[in-house]
Image (cartoon, rainbow, N blue to C red; front, side, top):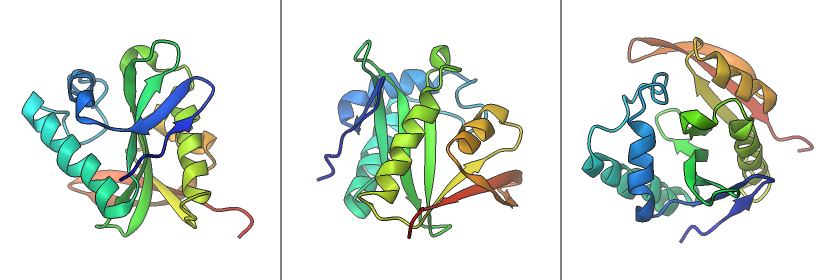
Length: 172
């Protein structure tokens, strides 16, 4: 059972539960939040429930880690997600984040991403962590760069030009 909790100055990053379905669904209804995610958001609450159960909780079981639910310390409310995800189709670990739009521009994605990287390079002992981004998503590119990731390559995926960034563990 994955039970890791990460804490930052303003955030608690904790494992998802099925209690996060409604808040996750509401966040993903915002077309601006899902504009660059290439998943189109969730169409139904049942789809969100299935995604959390099979993908997120499934990642915890399969890989021993996965994305964290992001909770604001100030409000104790779900505000997004952040964390690591093993991508078997690329055979690598990706750092990712998604945040409710009214909280953009406050450095929360960077704060959460930094905690996720520390978890990956610390307890998980990963050597490399990647980040995928559509190049037109300038805000996400800035977050990856602030986290210390650098451009590695561009590639086509499902007809879209994407960029892959990477950071390596220091002091190997």
